Length: 333
Picture (cartoon, rainbow, N blue to C red):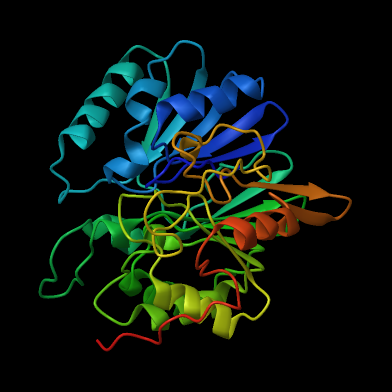
C-alpha cells in the first residue's frame, strides 16, 4: 500500500497481519490504515533518510502502545540538523532502553538484512557499505560528496516472487549513477518516483527519468506528492516517462497544480479505494492511496486505471498522464 500522505512517503508492506513500514510522513493516516487492516505488530520500520517528510509520523507512531514494534532501521546523517531528526534519535534511544524496540543504524546493500516476510521479499539496493562508512558530507580528498538524498535507502519488493515495487526514497542523480554501475536487479512493476517528482540534482530531469526507467522498466510510475506543496511532478519527468516508456501508467497520489490549476474539481472521485488518504480533505486526491497486490499469478494495481482515467478525462483540465495532453520539451541545463 502506497499511502497518500501528501508531500512525503509512506508504504505499508503486508503479509496478512504482519507488516513492514517504509517511511512515515503522517502518523494519523498510517495509524488509521493499520487499525483498519487489523495490524498491531510492525515487524520493521525502515526510515529511508532523515528528511522530515519521511520521518515525522514516526515521532508519534513509535511510542503508541497500540502497536508492538520490532526493529527500526536508520542510517546516520551528520548533515541533518533538524529538530525532528534530533527528537527522533532521542526517542529511539529512550524506547530502546525501555525494551520497546530494537534499533539498527547502518543499512546497506552488502549485508543480508532480514527485512522480509513470508510472501514479501525485500532487497536493499542502496546505499553501499562505503557510503554509510563515509556518511553524508562534502567531497574530500578521497571521498565523493554524499547528500541526505543520496543516502536514501532504496528497496526492491517482491510479492509472491513478482518484482512488484521499487521504493527509492529521495534518490538523487549521483546515487542513481552509482547504482547503475553495480549489477543489482532494479526491475519492478511499480516505481515510486524519487523526491516526489521534484529535481533530482543539477542535471536535466528528463535524463534522470530516462536512466531510472530504463533500469526499472516499470509498468506504473507513482508520484507520492502533495497538492500545494510544490509544483510536482516536473512536466519534463512525466514527458520522458511517456516518451521512453510508451504505455506506462502514470499516477499521482494528489492532483498536481501542473494538471489542474486553481481550485480542485468539485466532482466526487468515485475511483478511490476508500483507504486513508490525505487528499480526501479538500478533494485533492488524484489516484489517492495506491494498492499493489499479487492476485492469481499477476500483480494488480488499484485504483483501476480505467476508472481513474475516466475521472481524469471528465474533471481535470490538462492531465499530464494523458497522452493526448502535450507536454513541454526538456529544459536547458
